[in-house]
Length: 37
Length: 476
Image 1: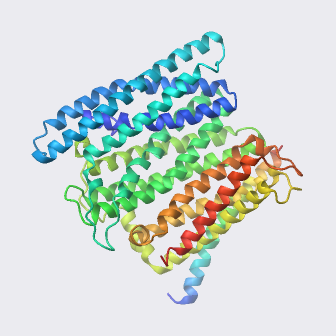
Image 2: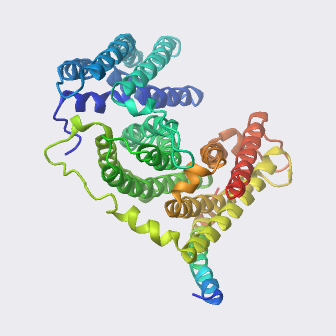
């Protein structure tokens, strides 16, 4: 693998993990905002 | 099937792990019951203490049976047999004292339970008798357990060291003690949770969710110390200990870590949601229950495989002794993670995780310490969710990175041990932010209670320490 391919892989792995994490945060926050006290 | 013992030793090992951990958890719950004035919690504690008292019978008889078998074991060399008998004698003395006090604790708990039912409410004063007895029983059972370890775990006294290859047997010792928190502790957490669901007691639900989170957090150092113990037990090799048996245990421990992560994550999210919504979601609680039951099943198998490493006497007819030290998922992940391409990908995830954890802990911690008083605590509490996803990311990425180069981390890096010790301290301290009622009521313009400020300081120092120790890993 050359440097550019490694960079793409890092972006892919981190993008997936961070994307899933932020989606979870968004959904949970939305749930709390709708029924919050 | 492994929970059905087929020998006295097996029964003794299984039942004797519950009193020390059970007493810690029940006493913790008891304090919570008094502080929140929750009768349900206090009565449940009395029932559990009464049941712990009943365990005296199987512990005593299985212990006597184990002693008789071990004393006449002709496979043990005579010199070793004498040392074993001496160790058993010391253990026996402390164990009898521990069992006596435990039986008294159980009896007092049943009496108190009867009195509280007759009175129609849980009374306050007489409980102190039970609490004092339980505390003494806790101390004595802890000593008796430690002396019990010394009977079969002779490897703990090994001082044979190969420079730059061996690691201390202290890791094995810590692992033997620590592994009972997420295992035996989990049984108590599940028992509390089931009772909480049956009684529909919100205080008990919150308490058992907290226990699930604590068990999950302690799962991290348990897994790490287990990996270190693997190096301690195999470098240099100990004749009676098989790397293949260790590896089979390690594989199941990996699945346990996943199970604990799912249970702990679902529990923490529900605690966080409850703080904002003031009610539990039946769906979420059902999910926690599902994860907990599955995790307990996996953990039982893990515990049994761990026991087989140094207790051949608990081997059942269904057990197939592993022979290949390179079989299994852990051994398959290791070479993959040794590849720089995968290592840096997950290391980058790990750094993102740190940013989320420290960033959110810093914001919430500083508000508690007195910054941004124009914002209510409830508003900044929402940010904790970011830190939570950071913890989940780092548990998975950290576990993968450690699998790739466990020798370096647990044998060669001096700052790994303090880093792993600071993680549970920081994570458990953060829990306070989601469970404290006093802190939750801090409105915009108000100052947080002094106790909360101390907790915030611990949170910030612990996570700063984790980052510093983690960064120094490559250099010290």
